[in-house]
Image 1: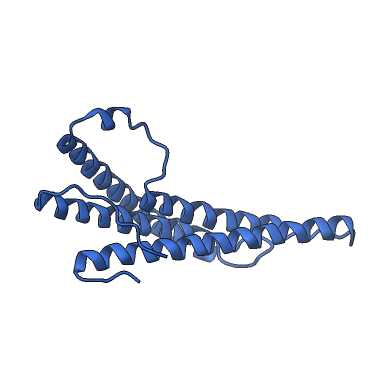
Image 2: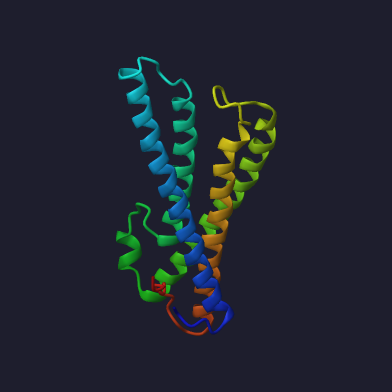
Length: 177
């Protein structure tokens, strides 16, 4: 277990733990998705009675898998990107570009959060067919993704600024499992 000495260490460890919860939830959703399709095949070909709710549940689960996975990609910095220009810049210019990238990601996440909340509120009175749950249950995944993007990119932005003010280069600390 890593030692947590300062606010900055706590922030980094907390972001890592939140990321792990997101991965766990997306993984569980993926397992449920596979099991659901197994039930679909069994029902269709063995019982000769197709479960009609599988498609709607699959769409719901795909939303959570995608949005949680996207947020984790922000935290782990694993999204596809063209880094040729950034990598060829001097170290200080590269850090400035990384700061700008984190700022843009946090702003985008904030816009996504606000828009998703509006969609969430709008869809509360509409039910998903076959599941009879509010449509907002599906859009909650987009709300969570926007909030997580603000949290992950904003947290990394704060950590980068702190390091920059201390004359250091920010490197993600790998938290021990």
